[in-house]
Image (cartoon, rainbow, N blue to C red):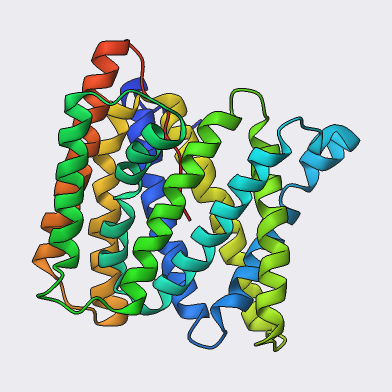
Amino acid sequence: MHKRFNVPPGLVGPFYMVWSCLLFVCLWVLIRIATETMHPFIVILFRSVFALMALAPFFWREGRSALKTSRFGLHALRGLFATFATFSIFYAVSVVPLADLVAITYAAPVFATLGAVVMLGERIRMRRIMSTFFGFLGVMIVLRPGVEALTPGVMIGLFGSIAIAGSLLTIKTLTATEKPQAIVAYSLLFVVPAALIAAAYVWRMPTWEELALLALIGILVSMAQTALTHAFLHGEATQVLPFDFVRLILASLFGIFLFNEPVDLWTWVGGAVILASTIYTAFREARDDHRAPKAGSFG
């Protein structure tokens, strides 16, 4: 009789974080492969439809009350951010080196900090000011404006990171009263019509092989989001955030071996600076508040 393998409690959160990193990078690899033969708009449409289908058990269980809310306006704002983030990141994945895009998305918490001050009226302490400064410094190291050409793909990826930050802020507000599945459902209900309109201009029916790939992308989206949720459920942000650097390592390796993308040392340096500023803020706030700060997801 086999003994059941038990992960030590202190390693459960980090395990799920590393697992989510692997899933997200594999997801982006599949998106890159899919967009070699299909327009990104078509990929977004089918990804969103498959993701919405995955919520069928929730709709079945909740019935008419599944989408009942008194905060439709905020759901609409979250849906708008999610739409811009999805279109931006999916396009960027198709044209930007994977490691560069991962480093750029690390800036989302930096933008979220600024947004929390402007949109939510939160007080900003000196350490957050310093963290934000170093976060932007990391972004500048990755982008190196004036030294490296700022391609449309890079700029769209940066815009996607800003949209992710907006999405995180609205999620932070919505989770106080709304069910997580409802938040996701409303988001998809805004993304799907936008993707349908966009895909109509470049439409062609995917082959059966492409449909299988798109279905796999939809499955990986669900798995990656679930793994990330479990990471923050089973471990404090201060415990799991450092392991998010695995995403940059894996993206670099996949980029080298699958797409012949050169390793850029400055991408690693900039990504490390951005992530370090986020981790520092998480540690300080956890120590002050005696609780882990809320965290969100991308992709």
